[in-house]
Length: 68
Length: 345
Image (cartoon, rainbow over all chains, first blue to last red; front, side, top):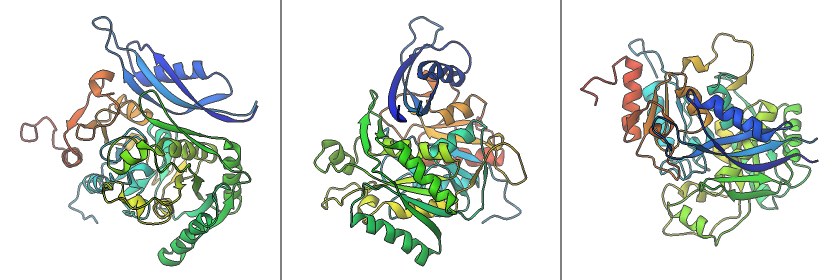
């Protein structure tokens, strides 16, 4: 398999605490081994569904997959 | 530049995300005046090529540190430090997909920067296959892109380093689409730069692979003159290439240093402020700073296609209506003037 760059969009439902480690964990889980999110950003935040909760995050990324 | 009466510099990070249609910085180096002001206010500004690159135009200021976006993220996350002050030897990677005479134009820019500016340039390496740049838009309207042959880019970058380059400028042939509505909107000062996202992907990939300063310029056929051209986009239509600003920026870019610490390095722990568009706070560098308590100055006067603001993310921000106000806030932080004081608000 040749190395490749591909788009990825995912939803992250954050819990309390800092967002950065939560987004990183979600990206790593979705990208899987042999790949990494080369570039990413939170591009949308949905309104929270219940008072006191956080709205879900839309994350757009470009994933770099090395040769297998 | 400074005297004994000056407060010490307040290293400040300025981020204008690429490819999201920022009103300031979404065009051709049009955030440069804001960067100059923030550099004067802070005494030390770390920012990325999207802010500083204006094709044939550039501004060199020893207080401004030119750091590619992937490396900027790693710096903000504490994985890399910056070593300012070094003169880089800038190698040039040219996409095999660039046709003559456009290829010759780029070679001549490198020769001109050496002859007229005294920059150290070389080696020049042509990729062993066309890179095959493709452009795309995400669901948010942000631009991104891909390469058909990313490994060819990395091989060429390795050859540059093996040949003595310490920084890398890369020029990829981008698709010409002179009749597209998106391009027309961009030239008229609206919408998203359709090239910018792919440019960021290319430079991120090379920086990540090689760990040296990198930046990108697209190679494009010239466009017919447009009397309605927006001044913010005009810098890209002055010459035959977008390369001069990249070579100048990289020539004084800081080295990227991982691991060991030594005197004179810039570390993220020294950051005293981060400045970003109010609706584009969801990137790695901004989150890394803000969630560690670095004051985040959110500029509402720089709207973009995103609406990811401090309230949505639960981040504490200091609001600024313009970059002039942001510079005042940075100066207040540098001078130890409380931002909450009624005189400032």
